[in-house]
Amino acid sequence: MQGNAAFRAEKYPEAVGHYSAAIFADSSDPTLPLNRAAAYLKLGKYVTYTGSEAAGLKRCAGILMPSE
Image 1: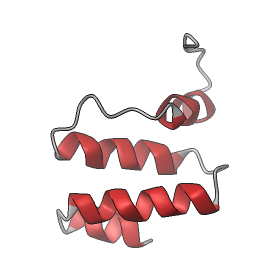
Image 2: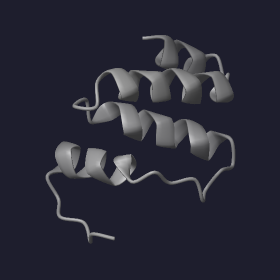
Image 3: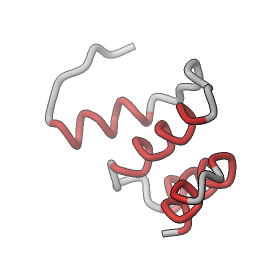
Image 4: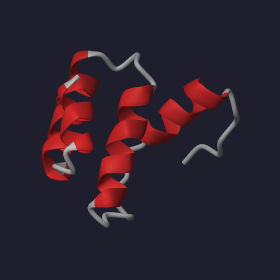
C-alpha cells in the first residue's frame, strides 16, 4: 500500500493523501482511518478529526465510544 510506504519513508503529508484516497475507495477497512490518524499525529496535527477514526476504532477494537 502506498500510504504505508510513504509513512515508513516519513513522508507524512503524502501518507495522509494516500490513506484519504484509500478511505474514499474502501470505507469498510477499519485500519485506513487509524493509519491516517497516525500520520496526522506525526505531523503534529492533534486536532484534525473526521470521525472516521472513531469508527475505525470501534470496528478494530470492538469497543463502544461515545457518539458525538
